[in-house]
Length: 487
Image (tube, rainbow, N blue to C red):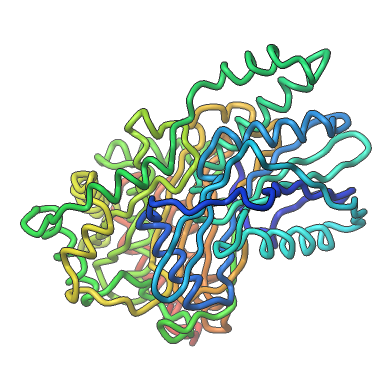
């Protein structure tokens, strides 16, 4: 699956139709199940900041031939009926947040009038405008679907606000919707209820994200003396009593987001990625901790700081109840990259991977418990948190033919006051999507940072785990000689 932003999605134009779920009047009822911690945090940010609050993400895939519109309509209704996260919305004010539940059996699918687009830019603008309007966390439903039809092939897109899904969910959604649609498309008759039931039985039970939210709320017991809380406390102390922030100048005031900039690039091709994987493994690390170490080397070359604290998302799908569920099923974990004085990649990677192993011991602890236990010891200074995500799509089920499907994970472009990074590994190699404030300073910073990161990764692949202190010295000298701002 290719990870990108809507402004970089190279989608061929065609005839666009939106397919939206519409509840009938009176089908929404209040629920006693509170939002999860992630949902509550997201909803509060949306309510407080308003502008740029639609943090949607979409899955897209291509199929050959002509779209079977009746089959897709039924597939969408069946897909929605399976996942209770798609039956839920929220009413929020400054005093309370109430979950609303939909009786999915009463919902219908409505389609927009077809719109012919003639350029990729026009199509991207249309999809961004529609997804941003519909996938609003303070509305219901906060998701929609779209198709783009052409003479010989078509694209199916599913867009959701972040309250409803995480990145892993997009893989599940893409595979499941495709399986239902193609199964229906192969039936002699779409009104064959038994054949449809047999098709759906093959998918199994997806699990209930709303049930997860209920259990999370019930499990919020005090953990003041838990050693995992002390680990989080030590981490926040390293960060100055707040969440980690990208250490290079982005030209924004903390808590005052600017329009978002984005960058999508290939870090290493498939051959180089295999080399990098072997080098990291030989040094006792992994591809993820190896890239984090390379990031630490890049920032150390400019700032002189050897420690790079950050957070990373960690999925919580090991419990089989949530393995196939669509929902926001991630927590956050802390990690600190520690670059050695001689900037040796292998030695630095050993420190980073040790920190990663400690982070994994914090599993089972929710961010709500961390916040409740630490209370006033941590403060929120920025809207965003400096984080780095990593997904190896090769290891996720149903991704073997993603190249053939032209599968994409597409994110909105909103606002930002910090830098965030999404690393993805596919059969093509390693790619990186970056999100940051679109300021003059940040653009200079990010171009230099990402360029030097790429150079360091290439150098590691060529040199193996030999010291690269001489390289970082050269990078620091080149920054100074160029007369540009420190990055």
